[in-house]
Amino acid sequence: YAGSGPTLKIEVDARDLPRRLLHSRIQIPCQAGGLKLWYPKWVPGTHGPYGPVHNVGGLRIQTSDGKKLKWQRDELEPFRVECDVPDGVREVTVLLDTICNELAAQAAGYLSFGNNLVGILNWGTCVMYPEGFPCDDIQASLSLRLPGKWQFATALKSESNKDGLATFQTVSLTDLADCPLIAGEHLRTIPLATGPYPPAFQIGRAHV
Image (tube, rainbow, N blue to C red):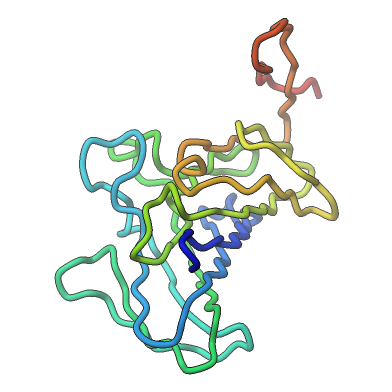
């Protein structure tokens, strides 16, 4: 990787969030040979290795032309999976399905949640990344699809929102994990007067 971490292209499809599902497509640069991928184990808002790997409902790994790659879970580390990358392949695609809405007694601020009108996305629930790089060195180029008519608010800087696909400025994986997103059909963002200080916004319910 020429002295720097890879850039992951992550597209999160939240249109099934009312059905308590998130679908992620993660394009990961790689080299031929053994590849080890991690589901986030330590995430903001926790004090232990509590990444919700038990909420993974589907995992597929394939090449850019759609050829499926066989993978296996590490025998000692449930957050890590391994696969063999064929010669000549420089990128794999991870298709990840995440189940949302744990029981209220188990729910916490680092999980993702949704219903017919509102959703909260914590990116640590819907990404995977390659072993061997600090999260500060891994870059994430994120895009997002939401149910029709939904608006969103996040500390991430938006680049565009066209044809139902919102794209954001590339950030490190560390910063991405620290920038959850809220969304809903009735949501508005109100700029606040901050003078010479960084911009700030208030999130409120849109009038209907």
